[in-house]
Image (cartoon, rainbow, N blue to C red; front, side, top):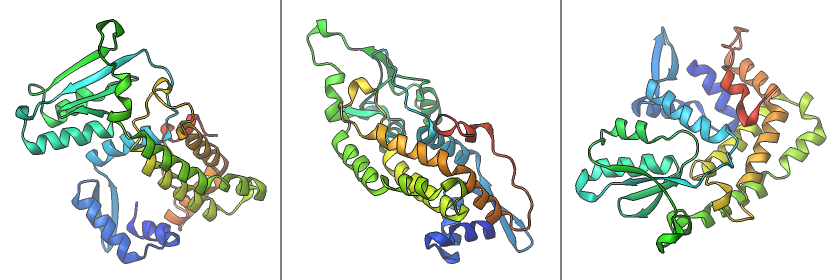
Length: 271
């Protein structure tokens, strides 16, 4: 993306040129973006590490939750004497990003569903010989408390539920307004702006959500309603929003590269 196009794209959100340039500089410094200069123009793309992080977030935000769970857990044991403070902090943050809850100091767990992220995390942090990783299943016959009973202490579901409800209260009427106004033929800029604000607010809650199986969640869990709201709004506005994106980033009419197939799989499928 050319920096000038990004500056134009962010202007409606109250971000001036200086703020955009500062933000991009920090993303380059932190390893998310790489820069390429052509004369006085600058173009940026995701680095390999930035693309990895982006793909992780993309999957978390746009993939429908998987309700299936066979009762298996992933458990990580990392006692304080197995690694230094920095390595343990990095491990805790990586595990939290993937939805692991803290059972005790150095003990983490999450319900196992889908592909495990542990091989990638352990390899990236070079902790193969320092931590213990296992799969477990609750066994009531042993007499102790189950892992399922620890959900309330391992994750702060009450705070997450409150944040989801604030999100629904803020955006609940948005989709009705757009439907009534005929979003299919609406203003592309408005569709893009509201869609961006909606996803921005949604991901701030969702990326802290361990996305536990429904069997471990309260019956009135609001996460499903928040996902449905984003899905319906995205499907309603994405064509017009993409029109604005293309026109803003390529004002001279040069076509943008086609979206990859993953884009059209967002929220279970787009036209």
